[in-house]
Structures are given as structure tokens and as C-alpha cells.
Length: 173
Image 1 (cartoon, rainbow, N blue to C red):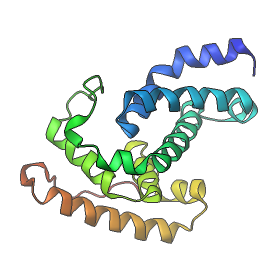
Image 2: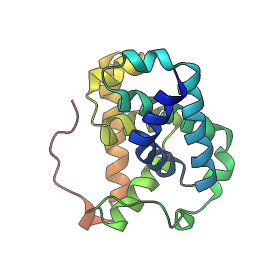
Image 3: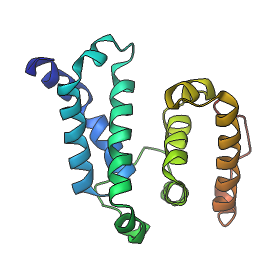
Image 4: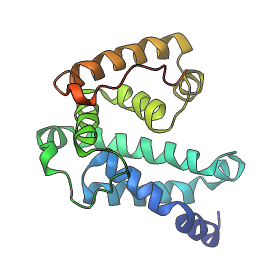
């Protein structure tokens, strides 16, 4: 992949990728590292992106894996940090209440690495169960069971926040 192509992708998708890294890692320095590593991986393996139907989705997968790898390496540090210590520059999505955002982050903190990946793919990326199964190499039934457990955990996390619990309506299938 040429420098020009990488620069074009950086201009088009850089903001979204850095934001995603920041949301997943909640640490500006780690997010910068993951963001840079994502583009380094792109430069090393640019061919898959050229053939990808959805370049942003491919880049998100690379960024997700990079972030989850960093989380594994820094798990003790991350787990000991308080949700209250999230960086101020963390961009908020319009219309998302701060309390709902905090509940979502608390839920992600309670999940193991694989469940974090499934949650991000399903509830952030909007992937259906078969797409998640294909991406992770599991059967669809395994994803159905894991997502059911994720929903149960989410309900427990939200139990202390009754005003945030929305009526249940399907979800990614």
C-alpha cells in the first residue's frame, strides 16, 4: 500500500479510528499507541484492505484487535483505574446520557476479552450473530448463548439504574 493511499485512509477514517481506540481503552496515551499501531498494520498488510467490501469495518476490526491486545497487556493497570478517571477529551455520542455511557463502560470492564469483542461487534458495530460467528470462528449457536449471557449481565449492571433500563426489543440477530 502506498504512502498516498495510507494518507488518504488516515484523512477519511482517522478520526473514527482514534475515537474508537479512545472509547475502548479510555486512556489517551494507549489510544494513540493503538491508533498508530493500526495504521502500521495497515501499511504492512494493505492488500486485505484493498479487497475489503467495507474498508472502515476492516479497519475497525484491526483497531479492535490492537486495543484488545493492549488491554490484555495492561489489564491490571486498567482494572485498577476508576471509571471516574476517564479522559475528559473522550468524545461523547450526541444523545447518549453520561450515566448510560458510564453503565456501558462498567459492563465492558466486567467482561472477559472475548465477550468484550462480541459486545463491541454486536452493540457498537451492529453485526448480526452469524457475522460475529464468522469473524471469530465460532458457531452461531455459541454466539447466541454468549450474547444471552451478555444481556443478563447488562441487566444486572443496569439493575441499580432503573431509569436507564429500556424495554427489551430484539437486538442484533
